[in-house]
Length: 133
Image (cartoon, rainbow, N blue to C red; front, side):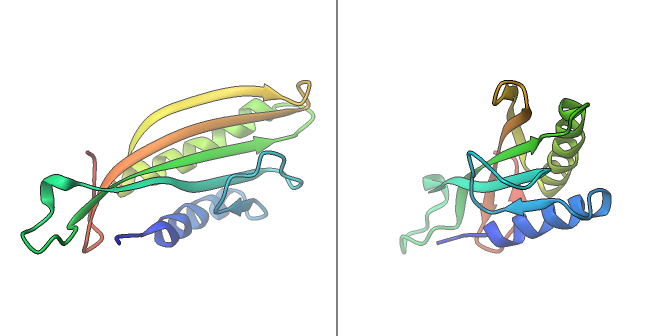
């Protein structure tokens, strides 16, 4: 199975720590994080690209989807903080070869927190090359 989740997560963490040294990043989705700002980046789908399976039934490429959740609970400008953080994540993933499929901003917990949910997809080869599908 082709699985580069830890490599991709580390690239996002490294990019975020430049601007937000104390940011918390998880590799799974938390619906109620206790530390802010917070980013959850999780691979939510990984399936074989059947067009590239060889005669030995070896998978040569997988199609992956990552879900990113960004949370802020700042008293003021929580939406702006989420957008700034999401922009760093998006730029990092796009530079790696992903395509952003969606970005959904939402106010949560009676407007005391803000959350952005985004999804990104790519085709990843057995040697780790990432391309847009």
